[in-house]
Length: 277
Image 1 (cartoon, helix red, strand yellow):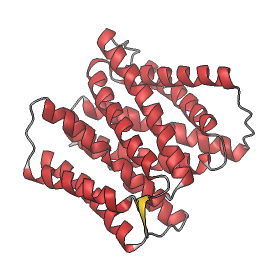
Image 2 (cartoon, helix red, strand yellow; image 1 turned 90 degrees about the vertical axis):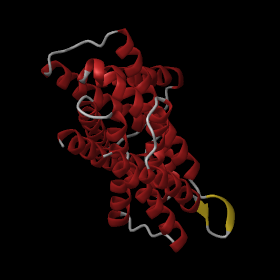
Image 3 (cartoon, helix red, strand yellow; image 1 turned 90 degrees about the horizontal axis):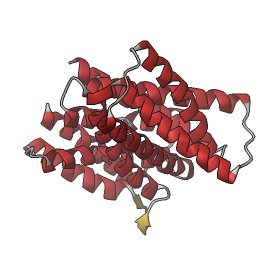
């Protein structure tokens, strides 16, 4: 039961961090938001790693954690951009399709799909088409493409971090964060964008980075005590928190078709979880 609770806790923290990331990206350059949040997360991850004993991942775990960290960074870049230019209550549910990637990996590894899982996949795909539609036009809604692409990147991240955590625990989170910060530093050195951040912006980035790395640590711990597929699917419920915050604080409203699509995506992910318990 503890791994499931940790996975759900990670989903809440990720959802809240995504909401803050979307808000911050509306005021600051995307690379500044990513770097600030990742840097704060790096400090926190290093602190937890030291307190846990400072275990160093072996070669396989190091490669997996590095790949997971870079995949997460790409996912954040895509998602924050989508949340900044589109409606959060539309873009965030599309990222719930993150759950499909661990399912595909599990199936190719020999696991069988149960009936609830099959229904969940169908609902998620149909819901995506409905939620991503632009009323009165045959095209994706603004920001929807970023949400879908982010889901794929986050799915790769969950699979990679889950596997790496079996080898290193908190060390996997630290290695992943080192990889993402290094990539961002290289970009900043090459481009040197001008950034004017206020004290409020710095506070937002600090909270964003802390929530993200705490979610990563909770997920890494959960993955060592349960099925990777089950934990990954439960953790992918994070968009629900983003949607609830957007509706409560930004007063976003959706039409009937989009509401149906959003509900179908979230219900599909819930069925994927139930099918694996």
